[in-house]
Image (cartoon, rainbow, N blue to C red; front, side, top):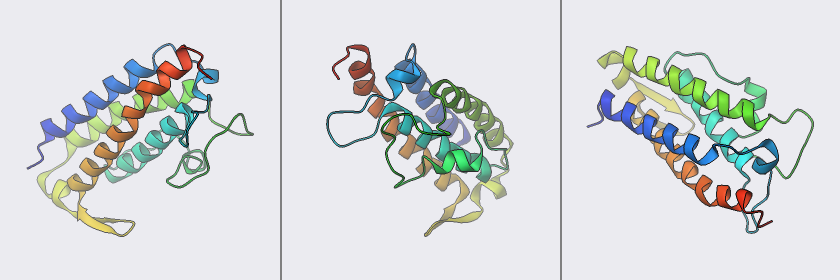
Length: 159
């Protein structure tokens, strides 16, 4: 069974991992394209923040980036291959990620048992609010893991 403390611990672990692996990187670093099919740091971070907006919505919290900005990083969106008009800056996305962390903690702590167990439909999936949020947290963990080698790629100028 998912507990509030377990959920908060998992999100805190993700936040620590993301911040550790993105520390000292620049917007230019975040735009470096991996040599194999995949996305750059900026797209992955934007994708995580986009999903955090969804989590915040499920918790009754405000979004941390505007919907049009989040849409740029939605599932199946085109990869970011360089600068483009209106593209979010790396430092702003990282700040939004951290702001979302605080709002997620606040929202999860305020959940009543009834609110947590309410059945919610997102896309084609219907499950409890808590199960959805846990699913999104696991999705975030997957993408956060991509930062480790992308950081090495950026810092060692292997491009």
